[in-house]
Amino acid sequence: MSTEQRESLPRTETDSTKNNVLNDSTGTRTEDEKSLQEEHIDPLSPGMIKLYGVWSVALLATFMAGYGTSSMTAINPMPIYQDFFRFADVGVSTGLVFAMWPLAACCLFWLGPIIADRLGRRGGMFVSSLIYMLGTCLVAFAKNFGMLLAERFFIGGAVGLMQPAAPPYLVELAPPLNRGLLTGLFNCCWLLGNAIATMVCIGTNRIKSNWAWRLPLVISIMASTVWFLPESPRWLYVHGKPEEARKVLVKYHGNGIYTPIVAKELDQIMLSLNSAPQKMFDYANLANTRAKAYRLALALIMGAAGQLSGNTLMIFAPSLYKQVGMTSVKQQLIMTLIPTLIGLIFAIIGTYCSDRLGRRKMLIWGTLLCGIFLSLGMTCSAISLKGQTSISVSNYNHKAAKGTIGFLILFYATYAWSYIPLVATYPPEVLSMEQRSTGMGLMVLTLNLSSAMGQLTTPIGE
View 1 (cartoon, rainbow, N blue to C red):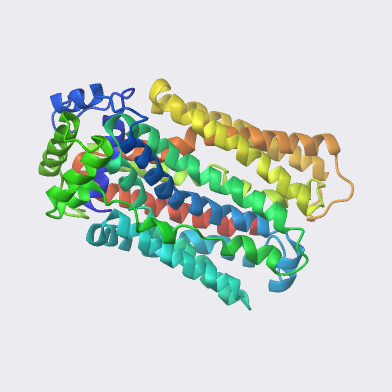
View 2: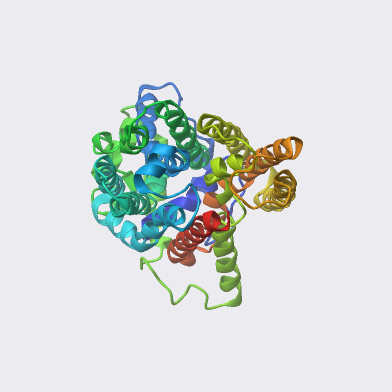
């Protein structure tokens, strides 16, 4: 990601009133940071009300990403979909369809920062949304397996381009006191997209034609509204438009008036640029000391752990429910929706807890509990199948099957509480200033590669 994007990410924590992240260069908070934290903007002022609308549109970026992920989860068990493409709900072909999304994000991850830097955060989101819409058009007229894979590639690529643009945009346009909250909400909207996609598929499952699976995939509402958003004031300042940056901050943070907090925010932008790395991707200083190598390893492990901790099983949850006796597609989708809604609630709770319990403590307890619940769930699944390995089992242990479902819900609630809020916040905090741009780019690449591996192999194993 670009220098400006990565600089903005740790500011979400620095400026949070409940977090104690130190200034990178001095190890202490600057006077400007302290004073900004003490400034309050009326949450019901006209400027803030306009800003809520801006945030809602910007959050559609991650909402649509979550929607795209979960729509395939809900479509996969539909018999009409399986008959059209002539494959089962698990297997190599299924794994390839799911894995195409993160693979595309890996292929285009290097292009996202360049677009967001050249065209702006708003421009980056707009380009990604147009590509997203192209993918939905492909699936609307898909005639074969190749067109389905192309749709998944375009949508995955769109998400990969969105990642460097949307989070910095939210952070850079938010008042200091709201930045930590918005960082958490960004990931929570991913889960909200998951839930809405499953709800839509529960409804379209009643359609007795190919539109049962086409309709959920063609829904796209982001591109038509993104271009009407204001540009990031930080990007405007960096690209020689300080007056436009001032106007944006005055409109939304000062309610039309050049207030002291607006002046301080402009000063903070200028000071942060003076200390920011000059290169977009600087590999020379990435791991040239033992301390830097350790920091980088922590960030990369966090990216991989967030995708290899068992959460991929939830992407194929309908197939798991089928294995333990739920033969109705509607039942499978409803049971897929329940842990998603519970996960959304726990992700919001985790966002609140992360500043109070500490990142390390949440990761330790979250990982431990995820391991316990996942192990118990898989044990119950094996007992319910009575040693059989076929997909449909007519003679299964009902009590053990219920135990499988219960432990999977507990697992996902714990995962949502711990990993979902921390994958976005922990890596940029642990990396030093000069590592952050390149390190976060590699972290996102590691995350997507791990996701692709999990989504490609899990249905084969089943």
